[in-house]
Length: 457
Image (tube, rainbow, N blue to C red; front, side):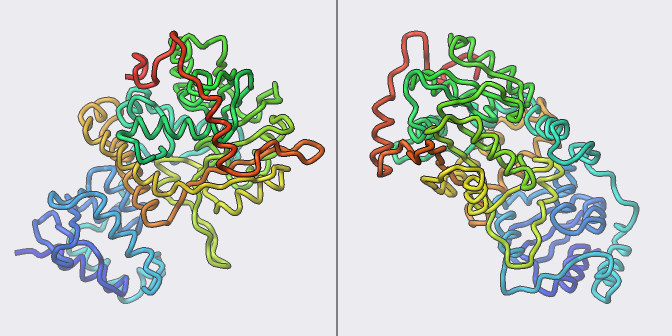
């Protein structure tokens, strides 16, 4: 009986210099790897060919998205991803580079020989159709940013409803002890942002990267502000405008298909940027920070809600995740929170408060994955099996990354001081949060909760 899995695992472990953390089931039914470990299934020779041509994260992602690699029926995706992440991040383990030079060494030659025996050596399979391969223009030019945003956000509003739930909020929820559902936690996050910004009736709010309009709707309903929301996603803007109209708030909320660099009508009393700065890029971040500073009135506040990566060891170069860059967020970049704070201060802001919400995002992502899996046939019908698998993989992997402290997320509250240096903030956090809470008002008769709007079901 052929033992494909044993041949493959033995050759891979020799190349890596240590045992792998997964059990592997090959297309012939053979298995190898640690008993009791999470299991992955190589459904065909093409799965191995993808890994030979693109060792590591990209090859694994291509094989999974294409359906050539599956998670074993007795394992789950979180177990597999957690095992792989712990293996890759083990500080005491050898970290070999796997490339053409390594393939020419003795372990690499033995791996290729095993591939030949298994019939898996051959032409490089075409990447799944969901992969971004051709990009035009300079990185983070307005044209290229629009294409990148469209790749991720113009997937279809109906698909996002399945994943995000009725609130249509695509950022980390805030899990207070009283939260009984994702909807509760997302409403709490929106309210936390409004309170940190100190919103009051009559103020003017700019929401940069406004998504489907949930924050500006909450701010107008509960805090009496007028608001401008900008996004460069056509599908987000279309739905946000419809939600605003159905809420009867078109006189107080203006949703625009507009780049933040093109907003002409500042100043604003407050600016929010929630889950948008990750798309800006390190080379453009100071441009972003300075533009928000210009758009904010003296004494106004900025709430910047942004995912952060861990700082790198000295001399190590930051590399984008090839899976995230090619399948999820083209041209997206993460920076350490310290870098974000420094850039905001360099632009003229005074940073007053930083709150880490890392654990909140892990829980939020697990809720989104559960929503996707609960509506899997409908999701596949809407966007195709490959794209649905991209979203499942990226959200589950992100949940593990937050839980293992490989990435974090932070709300940074900053102010544009007056020329006299006045911040306008009470001296303690409890004071300014309590002061803002006093401005919260019940919705008037024309409004209902976000989750009750027919447009978001």
